[in-house]
Length: 293
Image (tube, rainbow, N blue to C red; front, side, top):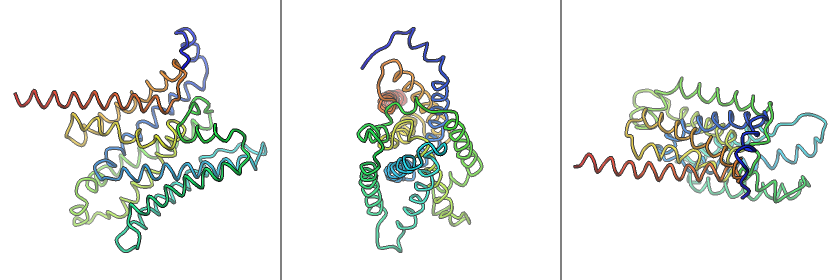
């Protein structure tokens, strides 16, 4: 850990890539928090974890394509990672049903382990340069978020706007499917379609968060803020709002501290999320004790 001076820290804000990183950080954290509450309540947390492993495999394929393309054109790996992750989300839901021979958890384990293994295998054959460095960056985020360009920024903005629009437009349906899927289905809601929509949106969020925290730490970015908010609030709307605030604040602090302390961005963000969770847990216990007095 190499701590820089405060003057050197302030000088970083003269570079556009730092502002790009902060904007992407805010948008990614906001999107992750919105769906994180639904994932926790529906016990879909495992899907986010499994899709993050699939995204690693997609990233490996993108690395091979980038090496093959060379400098022929401006290649962005999102255009490969996103379709692969979305297809995996659809596959997880369809093969995890009751009519299939594989249970949901078995399918998840199969896809997750296979994606990690094949991803690393593809990286090893890609001749993409620093194998250990590339894999570490993809798995744990490293400092890749501080190397984004304007194209990455606009792709992130477009995907974030799409995720937020879907969440706002279908908020009532998502709320119904989250709390009582059986009742929602009885009232005419196409629960299967909305579960599929949730899974696809999760895939978008996974791809958004890869550069921020890495594929292995994405679940923390999605789940921790929701769990923290649930320690204090019980209302769905209040939990979503609190989760969004906690997620954005922790992510921004993580990026800033990683610059100041020269630490990996993803690990720093998750560490702050963990501290926030512990603080909210303590606050929740104090609040419950105060009410009981």
